[in-house]
Each structure stands twice: as C-alpha cells, then as structure tokens.
Length: 168
Image (tube, rainbow, N blue to C red; front, side, top):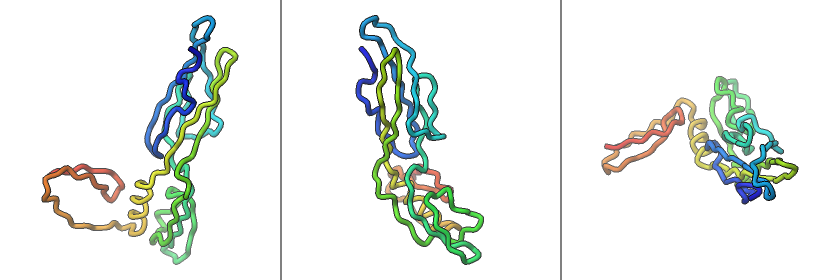
C-alpha cells in the first residue's frame, strides 16, 4: 500500500485555478492507515494545508515586467498586476511576460516514520495576462460594439475582468 497517490506529482494546475489534493499513507506491514503530516517547502498564503489535504490556488506566482505611467507623469515599474496603483494609473505602456511556463511547488509528507516529497506544477496563465494587459492599457475601458449574429454561445470578458457567456 504505502503512499497514495503513488505518483509524486499531485497534479498540474493553471495559475488562479482552485485545487485540492489529498495524501494518505497505509503501513505495508500492519495495513493500518497512519496520520499524514504535510509541510510546504514553498509556503503560499493562498494554499492551505489541513490534516492530509492541500487546497487553494496559486495567484501571482510569476513575475512580469510591467511599466506604467501615472497621472502625475511619472513612470513606475512593477512585477505583478496587483502592484499597480490603479488610483494613480494613466496607462500601461510596457509589458514583458515571465518567460517561465511553469513553477513547481513541493511538499513533504510524513507518516509512520516514512516520508515522501510531492509536487504541484503551476502553469503560467497567458490568458489572464492578456486580459489584464487589455484592462490596464486603457483603464477607462475598451469599448467594442459587436453583434452576435451566429446564434452560437460566446464567452467574453467585461470591463471588470469577469467572464460572461452570451447567446443570441
């Protein structure tokens, strides 16, 4: 029996997607389940470890190069969208995506004198960054007039960065 899951990669998740992974351990000799203790090697405030479960989401784990201009005509460079002072924002003029396509977070699971290292692989969300860039390049909102004459279901993003599904 031993560790479950036996694969040490718990999963691959997209940045900002919620997840939940459970790890169990059964002693091979006694066939008894043992209490599992999990320790994050790379703690993140949005990922919570409760008993033998890891749950949450990874947000803002990749660093971009974002340069923006303020209303006072100063220029600021930040690494995360959340670091932009929207009260002072005039507009983003430069953006470079983090070149890393993934980031791996590891966890140490211990039970019954045994230990196992597990990992979660986080994908860099290019779609999120595209929406953020469109939002911040023109902070008053990009107005697009469009008619859905196809009769198909269409998903789009509103000015608050919310996905909306629309069918005519």
